Image 1 (spheres, rainbow over the protein chains, first blue to last red):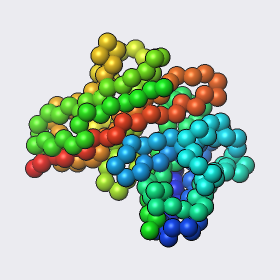
Image 2 (cartoon, rainbow over the protein chains, first blue to last red):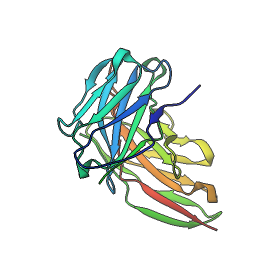
Image 3 (cartoon, rainbow over the protein chains, first blue to last red):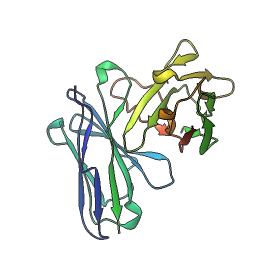
Image 4 (cartoon, chains in turn orange, blue):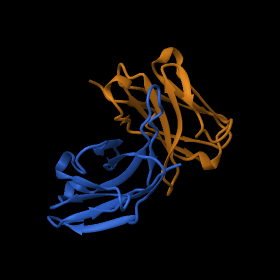
Length: 114
Length: 117
């Protein structure tokens, strides 16, 4: 069974540009999460999807961030326009509700804004 | 709201020595507790978790952790470390919920374990 996959693994963009991160959860996982770790800080929750619906987006930092999960499968996280403080690692994670509360993480997308 | 404190940002230890990585949490309600590990250039991997029952939890790679409710701690231990244990370790909590609950995790800042040959 494939794990949570994220693309791209690394991205370097200029301030003001747009970046879209993609996450493919483990097959059959209805819950999908985005987390972020900014340099030197702790990993922080951004938002949570249940299938295609946003269950909790209380961690989204501002309206430059837009997350979608079309059809309840893969998810994208778009940053537009990117700012320097958006640099960090963006983790995607998934969970199958019927299998309990263990959340499985992807390898992260490393974003550098210059 | 919950919070997690990992007291040590870096822990160097010699190979085959024991190690303890400390984690304390704060919460007004009962929590689930987790330890995740991030090896260099890899994602977060679940080491072990405490949901209920026995307070001593065993995980992968020989790690174990003990839940202490009175001290609100969940320290991670290994009796003899290996070079391959060099990684960053994260303690996390979530609040048990029912239905379509979020189960979102609150993480500590992480502890970098360096195993010295």
